[in-house]
Image 1 (cartoon, each protein chain N blue to C red):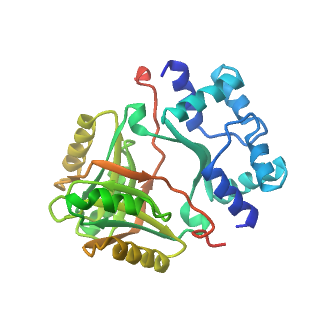
Image 2 (spheres, rainbow over the protein chains, first blue to last red; image 1 turned 30 degrees about the vertical axis):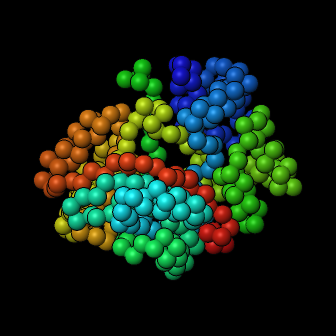
Length: 158
Length: 153
């Protein structure tokens, strides 16, 4: 990635403007052509640096009220199989392997989303039956204390 | 939300066109006008349903590392500890959860050393701990894709 790529990345983080030619507007602020800007975004996406473009939603405001973190105690030898099973479920947005810790015997961490908490609990029950994992725990959010979008900047800017 | 809003959000989460006229491309697929699409996004932003139209990055490919950490905080100190975490820009998410470890937060920084330093700093500033650091060993999925099944109208 060169410095112009970083300028594109920094500009994208400021949000895509709502106008007919948003890439032209963003390109102008970076000082490159519209086609160069689009080409760079496309390359960054192909390289996996940009996962995708799209709207950042506020779950509750779009009516998604059942958002639960669920942690599962899965034996090492079953992590691959169960991880792939959970990852394949549409309502699971995050599925990570994390190390167990004192008081936390869990190895698979997931986020489940549904219209409401009842539906989310039902989904978790279904996942648990499908995977045959009975040692798990629901950790619903009691209160959101902070939610911000990380800011990524060029190491050259430090 | 209107039916158009739900269809637009489904489509835009799935595939936001990298095209000179992205809103026109979305409009063509939805059978509406470009102005309808731009207007619907503007409404959704005004209502707060859409925080912004933006890009989602792979932090690792930008040279960043992240972790999930948790700690036990007495109920009467939750607000005070939350304020400490809110002051640290590298802490991006923080949630109160019903568990012995009741505060769960994410840290993103340029190196593991930097993350360890931030965690030590939180322990020192709050006098609480030990903070459990739970870095992902493997990612099976990270993809928030919400559709009409999840969105109540």
